[in-house]
Length: 91
Image 1 (cartoon, rainbow, N blue to C red):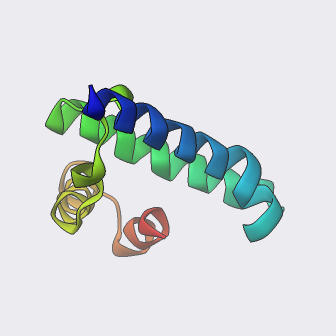
Image 2: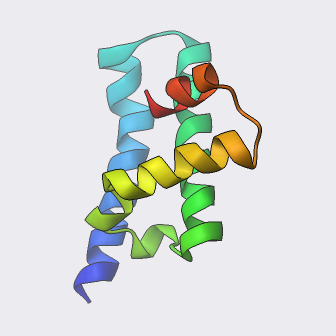
């Protein structure tokens, strides 16, 4: 269905961002690229654990401010991340 197609497309866009766009247009720093991967992996893992969303069921709602704010709060309260770390992940 549509959701499955959306999920597959969003997953592809994330993969292309990490492999093609970011290294050419944003940075050549391996540390920064690793940070992007860690941040996206953290968010996707949180979606899976907290919202029962897997990559093929991604949709636009996964990336709404309310979900991102909830993830930031989770990083602070459950993971013990500092505001600086949360801001890096958000970036």
